Image 1 (cartoon, rainbow, N blue to C red):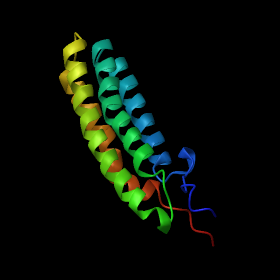
Image 2 (image 1 turned 180 degrees about the vertical axis):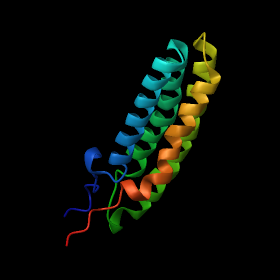
Image 3 (image 1 turned 120 degrees about the horizontal axis):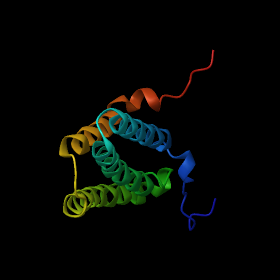
Length: 134
């Protein structure tokens, strides 16, 4: 393989792809449940909270896991740092935009689904585990 071309991983083959799908599903389901049982404001507030957690994770995954191989070690470290910095900035901007621009807003629903979506990461080892063959 030519060293001039970086060893990039397609997005759907990245390690965190399944985790991102599960996070999006959890956020969507929580928003639907809130909308049905609590109300419309809680539903879209919950959806916004889930998206505030999911979009920065999507950005981080895109930045951090795009390189592979020992030859790309320096690029991997650099992309992890830039991905984490971008994730923190994006989270702060999304919270600021949500609180400034969305009225009415249910803060408990927003933070509840935000935390629920982030807690999916705690189950990441189970979600990302490769199936064993007998």
